[in-house]
Length: 390
Length: 133
Image (cartoon, rainbow over all chains, first blue to last red):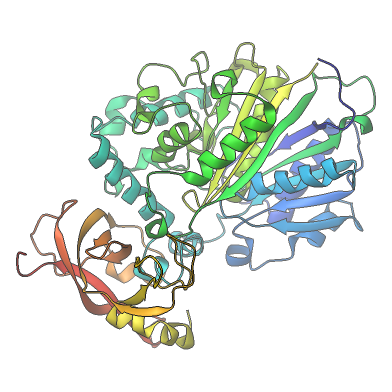
């Protein structure tokens, strides 16, 4: 494949393990990820910083992260701002950087996802998360994202009647993939019986259906291919599809809540840009903040028919050697859920797969990857398609 | 949310007042002024009956601050008989099993308080229908 000078490529990646970083503040987490990505890029100088974050104003009392983090990371002066789209913040931030690069306004962009959540207690975190639901009609009723996921899961089981533990496979596969990921939060395989006997979080949702929200930071250096110096160490990864779409914010305002229309629309648009169909995708980093979203995302993106996404988790289809591997480093469920930074982790991990540096988690012959993150139970969805070029 | 925010919502909260689209006759709740079905202006007020059935349901054990003292509490999405879905807590459930399809009706209840000495917030919840229809 020939190198296109105006293509947008991944020039460097970096990330912190997701977890309880008691010794690191939001800005320190950000700096670690930024430094790693810049080093990985061979020292490219970003002309703009896009910060993906959803919870800092509520949990750290800190907004205006653009100048704070640009300055703290030694980039004082560059254009910098925050992108907030709840759990989809990361994907939407990549999309903004992609647009700036494609327009030719800049040659090198830095996209950072950062989240600091462990300084606050559970009820405060739940309240902060609930601000991403409809404050006047959902949060006022005591609804949180977990509640929304439970309501969707309950309805899914009613409409399609899959076996009671049909979503277990998503959690089991995620944990299995995380065993060989040294950066994962939970590096322990789980058994189907453990899933079946796990404590209930919000019927029918149990502990193993819920990804653990924790601190994290990941960064990407994106560049126009023409701006890259020759002699790159790793195969080049190009962004060949980029799309964001929205649906109604409140679940009750969607004509069919089980139909993630924003996820479907952004996936279709990104696939069209890439001139690919779902069968061409080698791996799919989807948003498994709750296991029900793994099933619904597989359906929305065209990897399964409606009501049949759960079947892909039954017989190895989603494993590293299956026909559509997902959450290849453990996903949000086992790598850890970095909130609004999720989309950046997904692109970092997908890039490592395509560059052949996924170590024990390598998907054999991975040449194309789709990443998709969801915000507010699918109110925003951002999809990217990456392809190995050289 | 602040006093004025709640006050602005009094018709919806206390009387389940939404809108009806003058163009396609869709019933709309919560009110949104532009019809989600046909895209035309829809500002005509419409009083919903308050009757509906459970579309989906769950129970909340890990509550956000402001609701923590009420756990566990049941939450549902209700399909109103006029068509729209609405998210609300269930109340007065007792020993009755809640299932998808269970008939419910709107009642006014305390939703929470803004802190220990703060304003009490009232609004709609739904209870299992007292009379079979």
